Image (cartoon, one colour):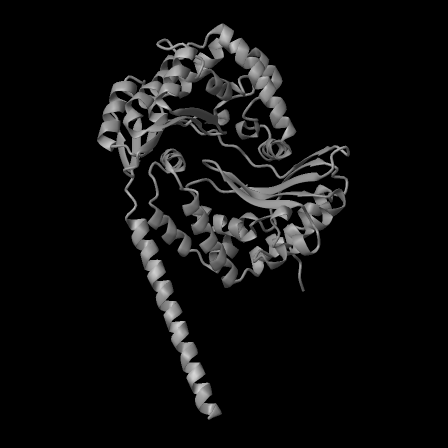
Length: 470
C-alpha cells in the first residue's frame, strides 16, 4: 500500500512539473507575442540629414523631442559648460516669442516643456495631447533655431546656474561621479563636468553660445523623436516645414578619443557622517558586442539599500553580505556607456570604519564574476535585466527618450524582441569572458568623498584586481 501511495505521489509530482512547464511555455510565448506586436519604430531621413523617428501607440497623449548629438564632450576647457548654459537659455524667448509668450502658450496647451544636458547629448522635449503635436514641434524648432540669447537673460541665467552648481555640490553622489569621470578620463573632454567650472560660467557670453549652435546644431546630428498618439507621415511633414531649413553638416561629427586612466581622487572630509566611494574599470561603448554581457554582469552584482530590507534573503551575494555584516548603507552597480568607451563599476555609501571591508567584498565579487559565476545566477540576472528593460519603457516619455537615444547611438532603434533574444543568448561563458577582459587585472579608477581614511591605498586596491591561487 505504501509503495502504491509513493508511486501516486511521484506521478503527481511529475504531473505538477509538467503543468508548470506548460505554464512557463505559455507565459514565454505570450511575452514573445506581445514584444513582436509592439508598434514598429518608423524612421525617415530628410534631405538635410535630420532623422525623424516615431512609435505610434494610438494614445491620447504624446511626447515629442529633439535629441542633439552634442553635450559637454563637444566642449573644450575654455567653453566647458556652454551646452548646459544653452539649455537654460532655450526657454528665455525667441525671435517670435518672448519668454512670457512662450510660457503662456505652453501653459494654455496644458503641455510640459523640458530639457537636459548629458556628456554626449542635449535634449529638448514636450509632453502634450496628441492633437497639439504640431504646435509642440513648431515650438521646439523655434527654440533651437531662433533663441534670442539676450544679454540681460544671459546675466540672469548665469546666477541661476551658479545656484544650481551649489545644489549639485550638496548631492554627494553627483560629486563622486564627477570626480570619477575627472580621474578616469583626466585631460580629455569626458573628464569635464556638465555644468562647467565657475570661472567659465561667469565668462560665457552670447558669442560662445552662438558659436556652439553654429558648430554643433546641424541637421545630421539631430533626431526628432516622438511616441504616443502621433502619425509618422504627419510628423515628417511637420519636420520638413519647421526643421527643413536647418543646415546640413558637410563633415561627419568627430569623436575625440578619450583615454581611460587607472587612477584615484580622494576628498577627505571627516565632518561628513558617511563615506561615498565609487570604483570602476573601463567598459565598452554603446555599439560594442560586449555591452549586453556587461549589462548582465552589472545586473548580477545588483543594488541594495538598507532601508529596503530583505538583504539576508537577497539573491545577490553582495547584498546578502552587506546586510549580514553591516558593510554599507547602500550600493548600486552601474554600466555607463558612451560612444567609444564606458565606466563599469559600483558606488557605495558606508560608515567610515567599513570602507576596507566593503571594498574587499566588492572586489571579491568581481573576481568571482571572472572565475566562478554560476549558470543560475546568470539566468536570474538575465530575467531581471529583461524585466527592468520593460519597466523602464512605461509611458510615452521614456519610450520617446529610448527612441532618440538609440537613433543617435545605433542609428536605429533595436526592437524589444531582438533585445530580448540578445539577452537570452548570453551564457555563463560570455559573462566570464567579458569579466576577464574588462575587470580582471585591470587598473580601476577610484573616487572617494567623506571620511575615507580607512579606504585602502591605491596599490592595495590594484593588487586585489586579480587572484593568485595555488
